[in-house]
Length: 322
Image 1: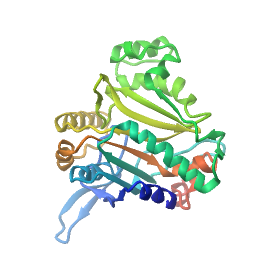
Image 2: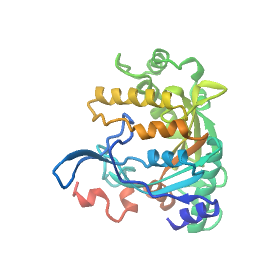
Image 3: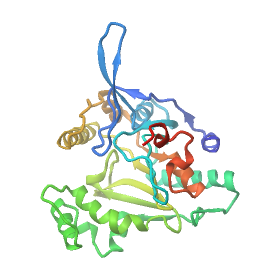
Image 4: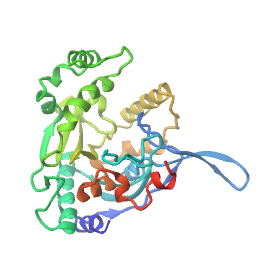
């Protein structure tokens, strides 16, 4: 933690404190926030959620005029596996530490530079310059686009950017495709089996420019709106970070959140309200970029261990005797 804060102090960032309990969490279809009930002194009840990310408050701060900010603290995600048998990789815990940082006036390429320097800085502080963890050297990162990664397995991503063409590509590679499978479902049948396992093995890898259907909260590439300015970081078999050039179109942001809210309902998940203050903030934000990095996974990488519980004093597998 000290090394992280030192790095951002050198970069003239301001650390901000964000709430752990909110009325409207994120809408990511694959995430399940912890839900509780807030009671006031008169017995009134209000639904409340533990945050899955500090992203919404951070973007509200950007809209308020702050230009370089970071948040370092706990977040919570339910309905994910925790605990693992010896010899297996397990990088989930319902409570974990997340680092997010944002810069106004830049795009995602600046955040790529940041994450490379931050990881090297923290590792050098612990282990000395030019050290290695899990067989990785941190002074020679790889940057590869999703399109380039698909080309390595014989697929032209430009030609399979619809649900039907992606489904055909997945079926052509021997994967079972159901009529109900979405574009994302078909994409991940290929990606998780043939692309992700090869990422970040010899050196940390930044995988960038995802199909626009997978934009999340990122903006489209101005020169090719079929793709989004989004990247993820892989190292030593772990996905440790997710980053964007931020979307600043409030109308488009509302459309995406409503679409995700509907999808959550189809999957039988809770449908929290849309955060109207967040929507307003998106429309007021300057051009910006930001990233979320899993600190516990970074420590796993540095320590050379396969289980997140090995870098936590009180993992859920021990607290709840799973």
